[in-house]
Length: 275
Ligand SMILES: [Zn+2]
Ligand SMILES: [Zn+2]
View 1 (cartoon, rainbow, N blue to C red):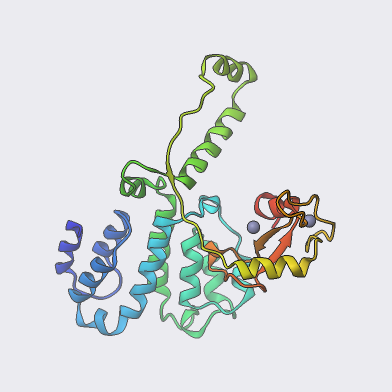
View 2: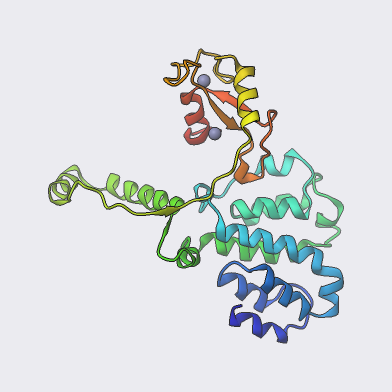
């Protein structure tokens, strides 16, 4: 366990404080470390606040391990989040683990009628704690990504970081002149370096995929056009099964949360300007 945890013995309880924050700044917190922290915390934390700290840890760890780089640095407007359903402390943390929450969104949130009682400005129950966590989480979202994580991979690269780096380099290249690009192309070897990557995948349920494909019956469930071609291996219409709420965002692998889409619609949902 990290030596940081040792400092925890000085922790005197109350709201989330500096050692807790420092710990998360330096990386994800393991179960063992969390247990150590709780065992060495004040009676008050152990008895009353433990139920808050566990989801907080999960939220902050999720940021450290996040594959969801596409939202980073973007201030989501969040109207759907605020207006969509009742917001409680847990759904707040779930949302925070995906992307930063701005001051204005937070203000809107705590005066919204959609929040549960303890999450309303007039009740004040978990608002100060939520705001401290939000500040910390927003900072974590802003950290140079994967710095801790890459160290954990023993020299391997995370697949999403490789993609992220390439996206950044493409943006840089776009800003440059054609002349410069062509000059570089002449002098750069065209046999790319091979690297090994680590990525997170979900073991999806084959029954869900088959049921959704049968439901679609060869017709894209979004644009209602025929599948563009048939599969070489078995002549079935080629459609792709997409999750409406992504598994990475907590969606479930069910027939109801899935759509059979043509490749165009599928790409548009993931990469199009509106979603
Ligand atoms: Zn389509
Ligand atoms: Zn998809």
